[in-house]
Image (cartoon, rainbow, N blue to C red; front, side, top):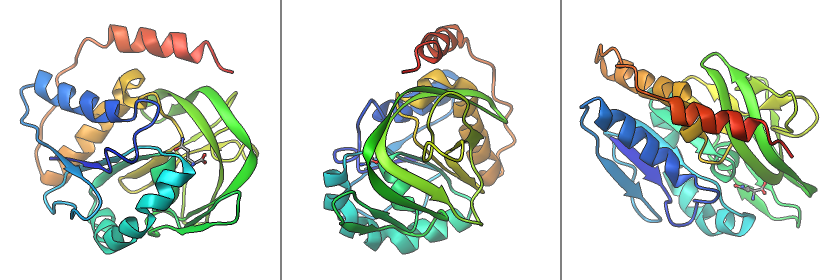
Length: 233
Ligand code: GLN
């Protein structure tokens, strides 16, 4: 089951597309899929296999901030239990310890990832391609929050041309067990099919389902990735 966190408040630059991509890749293989929206005041279903959360502006993060904290215990327990999570940009920041906005507001996070984010006066913008253990991941970054990884956090990838977590240490995103935070919008999974399948494979493995994922025709997705990667800003 896919849980879509804050579909109304946290969905910029096409991030809901990540949910659609996973749904389709499961359906194309004849695997059952259910998508459950999880909004303010709604609990995350305990049967969640993959949790997806998108980006949002600072204001949207402030609006849902209190609700995110109420979900903190569940999010930490699920992360510890190996639930697969993909959090983009604003939601990535909220899975960390805190986000200090550029105008001095403190939005506490839920401590799932060992990262902290501070707002800045510059925006890090552009298409961004990074190499990971599952091939190239291509997305679009647009953020002014600068994220630093703590000692318990590992970067998802190293940056080459893009800015990534903070524009300084050449890291992009964070990977801790099955929890992934990234600045790549786009939606990132539409241009990163191997990454999408990695999330599905991890979720199936956690359930004890030994299913070999049938290869799909990813020609269009890979072509889109080449075009986007060729247009960094
Ligand atoms: N408000 C955050 C920032 O600009 C997140 C933006 C986003 O999710 N794209 O850093």
